[in-house]
Length: 187
Ligand code: PNS
Image (cartoon, rainbow, N blue to C red; front, side, top):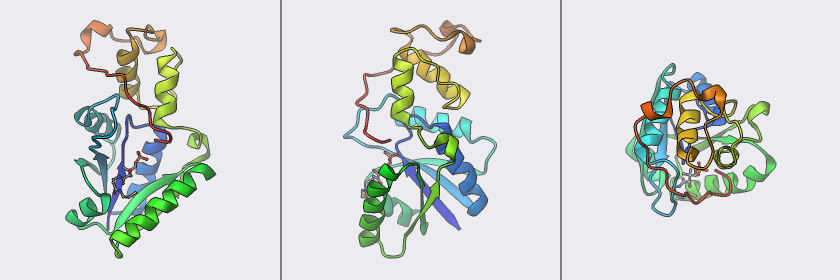
C-alpha cells in the first residue's frame, strides 16, 4: 500500500525523519510530498527541500515529490489511499483532526493515519529549529547533518557557524538564497 506523507518540511527535522522511517515499516511505499505553498515565504525553496529530504532518506525506500493544491487531489493522482501525519503534542491534535475531517469530506476513500512522534522528538518543529539557529544555537541534534549545514549557511551572515559543524569552509558551499521567511505556527 502507498502512503503519502504531505508537509512543508521547511526544513525536514529528525521528528519528520522518525515518522518517515516508521512509515516505511508499515507501508510498502511512502511518498514524502512537499507542498508548494504560495502563501508562505519559506527559508528553503521546494527544490532545496526535496534535495534535503532525499539526502536524509537515502537509506530508505522513499520517493520525494512536490505538489500544489489539495493534498487529497495529489493523493488521488498518485492512487494513494493513505495520508500519513505525525502527532507530537496535544496542541497538534485539534488542527490535525480538523485536516483529517476536512480531507474526509473531500475524499471519502482516503484515510489519515497518525503516528505518535517518538518522545524525544515531541517538542521538535521546523520553526523551532530555525529560531534556535537564527539566534546562534546548535541544531545538529535536531535535524539531519546536511540540513544543519544548510541552515547555518543561511544564518551565517548574522551568526557564525558553530565550530562543531564547521568541517568544511563555508566558501566551499554553493551559494544559497536564504530569504527572511515567514515562520508558521506549528510546522
Ligand atoms: O508540514 P505542515 O505545514 O504541517 O503540512 C500541512 C499540510 C501541507 C499537510 C496541509 O497544509 C495541506 O494539506 N495543505 C494542502 C491544502 C489542502 O489540502 N487543504 C485541505 C486540508 S486542510
